[in-house]
Image 1 (cartoon, one colour):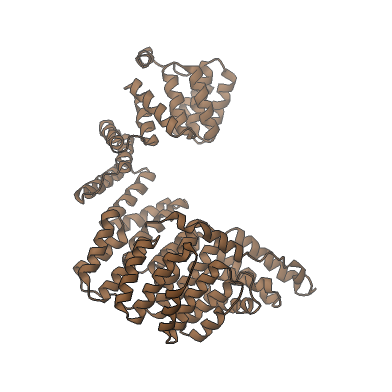
Image 2 (cartoon, helix red, strand yellow):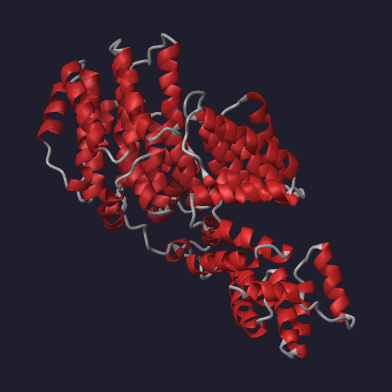
Length: 574
């Protein structure tokens, strides 16, 4: 997705300025009733705690319980509405939203959501009524105007909607979305010439080029202009050759006679709201962005880009269960595979490595896409299955080469790690070098290869140069500073070793290897008491078996090995 990041700068500030979450504490109103107050207030506190814990469903349930106990509390009505929207509970959001909006809800979000719901239900007059509000704030006012156009179009006044959109004056951040609104309205009206021109302008101006290309391509296919659709897909893919959704759209256009269905009023409205909602989501990981994306989803619960973006927003705001549900809800089509891959990675990031690996394996068995091969290989590597991971990386690298894609250093690096972990050092060394030929200043590659040379006693001078470069590129990475310190240790420069290893421990205090190395360095400079402390600490940090044996031997009275003279002498030639 190509994004003009500067186009979004004003949006979050505008939204937050116009849509402050209600700050009133409902405790006073809840405690006013001696019989019901404590129960309502307890539910309110539970809801607030659930919200803090990112449990959207729990927060919605608790706030709804508190509101039922104290139905006169407008604060609780608003909290029930917002938490229900976040949780995706449409019925409860509408019920509480009606109460909140009738009181002129402070955020003005309830009225917008109810308008989206009314458009989805084809009750366009009701939608227009909900949108007739004051003091919306600049961003919400723009959203209301977009929805008003579609409410008007739904009532048969598409000419009036087009006239308003054509003559509207909006702030700079909204201009691209207004252009797309014009294209969508002209498309709906059947004004193919105006729609074509507006879509072309939207492709140029939109910060979300991929989505606009998809919309324009669907328009062209509905016009039976298949060759033109393929041409705009190809134009995009020349700049973004790995973009999966457009690649799949191109394949479908070229290999089938499938014509996309014409969107309904609410589906067109969802596409109009997607851009500004996505802009907000790109700026801040806040619940507010989820609310607008839920609005878009209410207009069209099968619009894949909005579902994928909603899932990502839910993930970033910590609502993991809701994010997984959203990824699972992406329908079959060009966006389904990226959503499946994102879902797998989310599982892995939550510590469910075995489940993520099993899902990746199932996906790999039925799909030969390079992205699938890579996610499967990555998870095999993370699970310690290095031999199989190396084979899958080889498949992916061969497939990328066959497709004429630019080599990616990361996959040579990852395969090198797998080779090194399975004692195929010369293959690993070749892949490390290949990665550096593609991208010479990758700190992780420089560090890994340099460190392996140090502990193998090979190319010590070149290894030292590599590790120094890595440390300069990433001066706050503990494991890289550890490599630099250990390189000094191998050279016999124990004071310098202590200097860098102490820094490494500061950045990575829980790393057993770094504490182990610092203990050895302390011993060599005569700081035996501190050395024993570092070895004892390293033992508490779950070292691997070889490290555990070495640490136990040192604590039992053994001394660290002094680097061989030959290695130190070779290093002295640097």
